[in-house]
Image 1: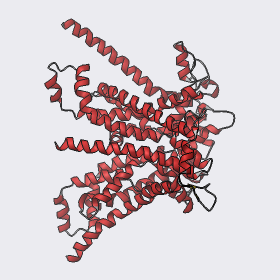
Image 2: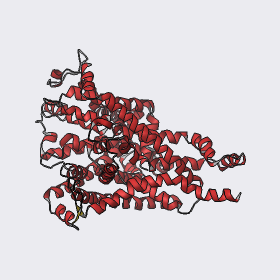
Image 3: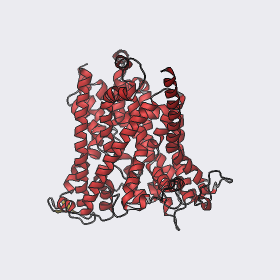
Length: 278
Length: 295
């Protein structure tokens, strides 16, 4: 009996190891392959069997990707729109979350319900009317079209409301006795104590919009405010077929900031995304 | 003092007003306007919109292309959700440990979820390249014939589904791990005298205990996969032969390539109905969850 248990244990251990290798390959290999391809010469990308060890790193692929379009401009647009969304979301969400967490007013549940319902409405459902609206307002090809539709974030409001609710009433009362205004209560007490929720909401917003391809694609017809994902997607349209090494180099440029961020703040990012639809 | 009280009464409305304005303009109005547009024929340029009643819906549902789009979307949603949840459940049970290596694999499995769909699409397109792709090279090593992946109508949708699962499964895994960790250990101890995990405890305790989480994931994944756009726009453009054309991509094409705003809006209403049904179930489950909590 004891012996059987032991062999079962060894078998389980082997299975565990095999599973780790398989899962590791499935989830690592695409990234490894992307980076490896990005450093190959065009001739090496179509070698069969593929080359796994490179004798030379072709950095010029990155230069080629970089020079094929206004990439600095794309990156700048990505930064402006993601940061713009982030700032505006907080400006809108902090007061709203404070009201939902700390005030009682007529129609509160209705308005909060409306807010929560917007979480279930993906931008893929409403892009056409918003496109028409933006075109009417003359905002196509401007940062406005990329930023304004995301100014209201139900997720950010929800998260901040949760943390504002946990702040003890005594602190607020004490501040009121010291004749602090509502504005001071929000900026001096609520926001500093809700820092971790703000990081969570901020990471979620930043990563989602940094990665977004759909919205900038719809709202732009020229390069004025086009963001990095659009620029990368355009790399494919180089004359004479796809240069996979250059395309992968471009993708490395797009992915690296997020992977570094993930490496630095893995716990918070996982928390942000796993929380986001709960 | 009295003035202060009055001020406090209207203050909350000022605080929530900006958010409500944004939600009304960018969520509620678009949904309603989309419904309105679905009853008109309009090419985006002409100054007038012609009211056509349900004509847009009638022509949509009598077009083979659109019916195929619906079926593609439903197949995509169903297959992605089914496999993602099952694989994630197995991964979660396996990875639900706090050792360094397990946490690392959790992070690795999750990483595709936060990578841009653009990069994911390109990498998989390259992996699935028929002549020089790594996947066909491996198939060749194992003695199989080359697969046509996204180049053939029979395999294209399946290839897109594969990418969808790969991107989503890590998210589900971590959500399920969260669910597993909230199961009280005493339940296992009271049922199984020898606390060794087995298929029996897995099916009799683990699955029922995480079933609310699984239901929740099914709903969320359905919504996520109903939105699928990037893989299709980048990898297949809906082809070959319409085999990977799904709702969002179809709406996008009809609106911006054919300028048939009425048809695109009508297709948008169909997507809305699908999402509304899913959301309805979501709130039903949510209210059940609340019942559990208060019991």
